[in-house]
Image 1 (cartoon, rainbow, N blue to C red):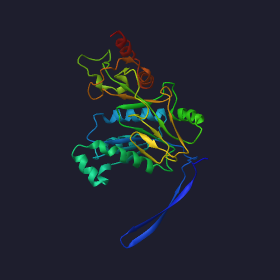
Image 2 (image 1 turned 90 degrees about the horizontal axis):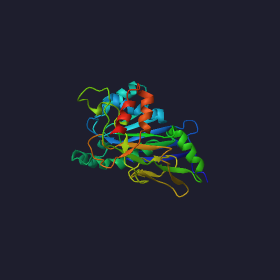
Image 3 (image 1 turned 180 degrees about the vertical axis):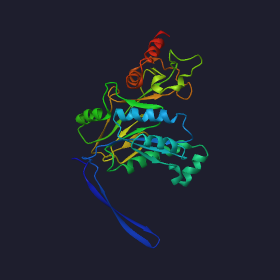
Image 4 (image 1 turned 45 degrees about the vertical axis):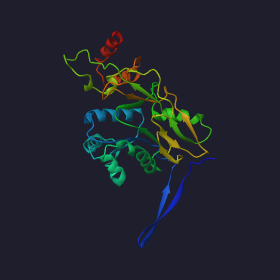
Length: 297
């Protein structure tokens, strides 16, 4: 049976001596607006990325099939970045100071326990996108880029995956390739130039040989019309639905693991697929020397 259908819910509320009823009309089938929303985890403190780098990251995902962004922070520090994205015409929903809605969590944030907010953030993204988005793509941060080695958009990959499903599709595991190792420096760069002055896909072309295991620190796709909850990098789904694994060549995440500091000692497998895409989209041909140079090292 198809569990994806329109429905209405009546919410009854009471606050001291006052009470009322709110009627909510959902349209989870989204036949008119099948949008895909990218939701971030809550970010905090000034990002190391510049405004232009974050815009570069967002534009990449628009090209890859993301329709809108729902970006979270804990402390309001993302505001200048959001203004820059919105000024560029991107559809961005900004959830500012997310943990401040929860006194205990905000106290833990002030003690440095920022990661404890992530599951609540996933739940908030899911609940606020009922009837608003057909799919949610969770992505933890601007040091990760989603793409298809086949050149497909996310809608292309989902259409093919849904054609294979026997039941309504609830969630999809999107696996991650961790990149790092030696960063590339443009051949025409001046002496002492830093490799971290360019977008991450142009800095690293070596990754760990194996991708992350399914449903384990991956970047899940979740269907709001079907999923009951979303937490721990996976959806919780009803029995009359199914989850699937996304073939990594259809759609995957490149996590630039060494963007902050060197930690990927086994990033030795050459992989320039997303690099080549960035060169064709943004480069002027000079970056091609980087890849050849890296192959000689």
